[in-house]
Image (tube, rainbow, N blue to C red; front, side, top):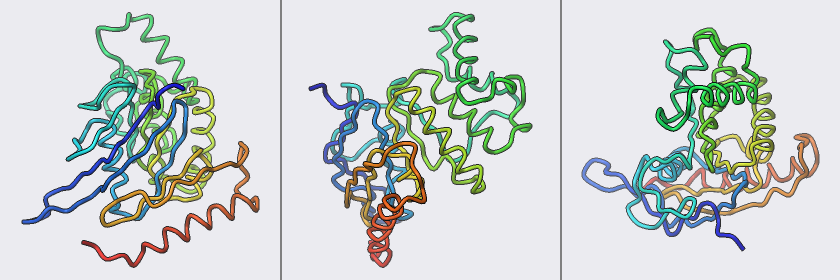
Length: 256
């Protein structure tokens, strides 16, 4: 049996808060297989985004181990891409130029760069907008461009930190379907942080419920529903309700 793509072992992280230390994550242990889709849900402040930043190498754990693609995470790497809550496209560059920024300058010939950019614009449905500036795009289109930028390096793992939270409900629902299609096509592992339990159940193979104060794994729930998932089905609604009940149990937890 092959080793997991990602392994977190007893990971802890805290931050200074005034004259004391606040523990944000406590004893996080989890494995993620190649090609899996895992969603993290939990109350604000439970450490979901911090956990993604640790995996991305943007923060350093206080203790514990994070192994990605058989190597310890010591900083950002090409094995891992990340998409944030806002698209972070540079407004003075075209969509194609923004995607091109993610490709290492010395590793790809010009023809290969153009091919990869074109392939990923097609993947997210933006081939006709290659030369558009970000200001000409809708919010949903800009996030699709950010997804293309995150994938163009062919990472083993894509991290998504509330990527659709700023979008209206209809656009969000549509992009959830688009992300599912992209995941199926690309066959890479994805870790999604979201406050939206319905989004987690719709997209993920597993939903990891984080308890707050400090952030810790409360439950790992397998989503054994066929794709494409029917949000109105009895099974979908029941699973969503069960996860919401778990989250509601933490709503009155005191902050320490």
